[in-house]
Length: 72
Image 1 (tube, rainbow, N blue to C red):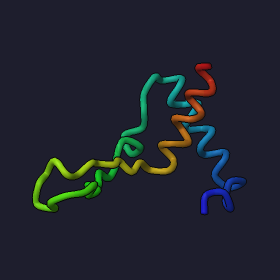
Image 2 (tube, one colour):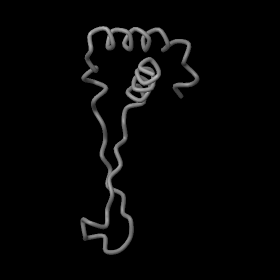
Image 3 (cartoon, rainbow, N blue to C red):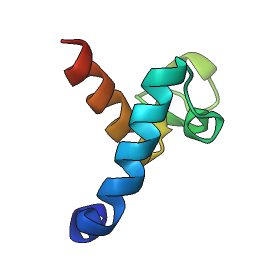
Image 4 (cartoon, rainbow, N blue to C red):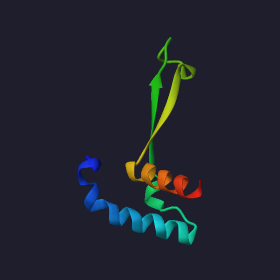
């Protein structure tokens, strides 16, 4: 969905990226993530049979990519 509205969101993302790099801070709203336990195999009641995945906000990934590219 974001790819379809890239023209409209590119200026705000650019502003947020530039501001973040200039101030040396990371936006608080981008720090939220959802941690989901995924069952691997075996007994479902055993906690060690799960692994976790972290689902980040899409804009957080975009900002991280922008920062990585600028730093490289």
